[in-house]
Image (cartoon, rainbow, N blue to C red; front, side, top):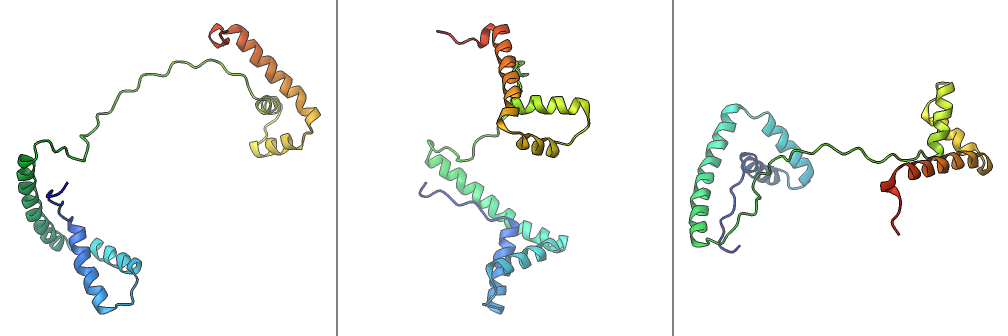
Length: 161
């Protein structure tokens, strides 16, 4: 919106601009990435007294921003802040139990193998991929049979004509 006051910089950004300018003057060949890393490390190790001084500088600019923004809102009553109001956490309703689903052929294969012996998933996947299509057909038929049984038992799942 034209005429809208800009938000003031944070204390870190004020520090960053000053230090970055100094670094570029001292060493023009330094990359932006390197300079940013160095400045951020310096800011982390900055004494609390110096950080407080920076925060005081920013506090003044924040107050002037708030005054300018209040004047701007008076002049533009139809203005809406671009920052949305804080969202309230919606309470999630407990999920309804979903309809039973048929196991996949691979899941049936895994279930049969894991009941008899303890086998890891990677080994089961390798074993499954090693089966030829004719060996997989029995698991496909079992899966189809489970699916049809579930379909018959649940009226909600039946397609409407």
